[in-house]
Length: 305
Image 1 (spheres, one colour):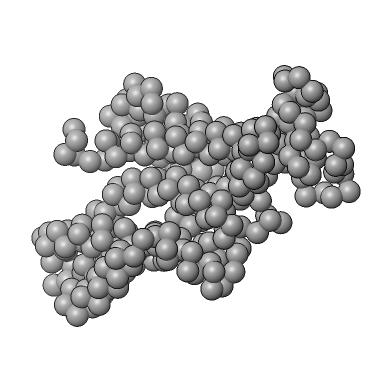
Image 2 (image 1 turned 135 degrees about the horizontal axis):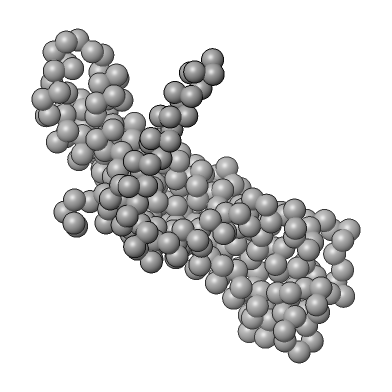
């Protein structure tokens, strides 16, 4: 058993050393934008996951709130309170705690929505590109129908019909997000399925699902990774837009977009921090994700090298 463990560790160490000597890691180490993006994303992820353990306040604990503390400016401004570093909102909730808890919901929607859209889009894209014919025509016409309407219009229609909620948003983003995956994966599969080893797999009688998973899907994986990275930031912005319009997450589960909406209602009363701080937080998060996405796009697209 110890000998087997040594072999596993040797393989793991060899893979790590190979990665550290790879061109990808070399380019990453010398790309300042990618490193900055990584730092921003990792920091916000850590804050979202572990932040509630250190948050000054639980904004959902009504018993711990006091209207006396409402509309306090950030601590460094006149009238600020050292207990509330970034100030408070209309209900006396600590803005720093709200940003921590709100980022959890926004990140959850962005990541899970991307994964769901990716799963549905890859499946339909593989089927359309690999089998072609009537199956391809039906899938692509459905995708074209979705593309013919503005995303925001479809989202507003679904949310108005079925109500607000994180689960409803995930359904919306799965429907809207899968279209780009379908078109991208289908285009890749149309070229990959003509490669000799795919024809050889068909000749020896391998089942089609196995061929698609083992021989076709790995060839489109890099494109999917790049697309997914960019999609996360887009979904976070979409969630913020829908929440700002009042059809996103419910008030009981405030996301960053909901915080911006709450702040906008009193923005012209001088309480700028309630809207500006969540907006800046969203900007930083999407900025970091886009920096990483740009690096991955440049690395995995041979036409840009």
